[in-house]
Image (cartoon, rainbow, N blue to C red; front, top):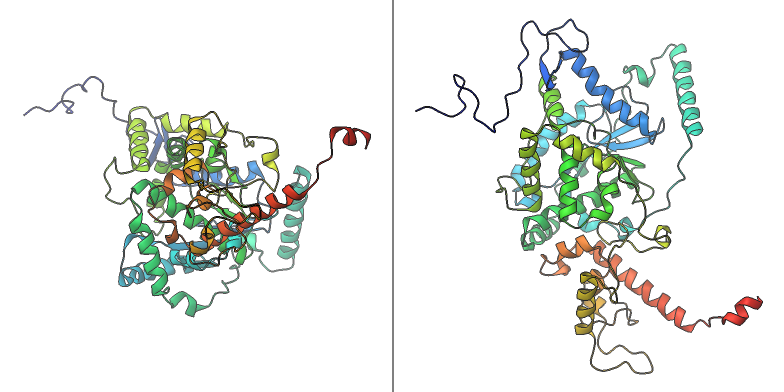
Length: 495
């Protein structure tokens, strides 16, 4: 039977015209000499060498334009090019335990990953996601961030670095920028890499993800735990920057997804070039100008070794989660309108990192317990719908019997039963619902996701311990404020 839109007939109305293929007479748009091998956009046909130069230039231009990474600085990345002025490292996070993979399957994947990491010649680290159950609570605290260097300081650092490399080159030995000298090998214990994670931690991680009801909440929880683990590894090994491989296409999908998840206030941090929410460790995205098509062509043309591992949404239907639905929507729209991804991406570049209120920019401002962004929830007396829900929930949790004059809580402290950690013993939380102490320390998006978790006791201990510590600190501060004597207006004017 005849098919609509076949080659012998005209394209069906409404269908996009096929992209033009490079002919034998067409030459590379860059050098005008070689035969093109890849077409990035309509009319942009590149040869092999020009495409590589174009691809690498995008990466270097993004780093040079922002001037965030200084020469000689350590950065933790998933992949790094040669002849860089900073000292990169590579990390691989084994997340197979969250998907129910067996120990044999995980060992097989690690056996394929380790030779690739060793071939880079860079310091590399392999960690399992189960290690989040042994993280300290300090990973959720925003450390002091060093002041950003000025443009003159960056130029001075570059000049000093180039002068140092010139001296090393004049001395007869090749410098690191010449690509001859291999970086120092990673100072890791081979026994620690070969030893599998504890069975109790693997079981706890599997139980945590199996208890989550929706795939959307699973993907958000996985991303949160992965970020905390990488942040801890960066601090433990002295890295001040963490580079991720988020492409332009992925960031466009992430922007629309976060809008649907209620994270509109944090889009500048979630999709921008740099993310300074953690303080001493900054997350940068140097590949945010590359599209998925460019990355796929580069890996194919230059035989970049890859290991394919299943994700939490592998083989999931299109409407299984908000992430999958938004990804299918953007990619389908991109096939019909090629400027979709670039339009959404350019919109994210215009977002400005500004706090919601002036005082929120201070170091003492509360931040979310999971994503570590500033709390964007309204108070109980707010006129918004979320404020009305918060006020209704608090009124239901209030005890019918008033507190005595000795300020004794009506029941046992909720912190004593949360996460099997030591209770505060001081009445730091006076609510009957033990989850309220944790929920009030989450932003709107994280609160919605945690509703799909039946019990917060399944969270890693470092999250529960930090929640208890924040609750105690807030209670102590409230007690101190009640004991202070405020000056009257007349006394304040006379002073």
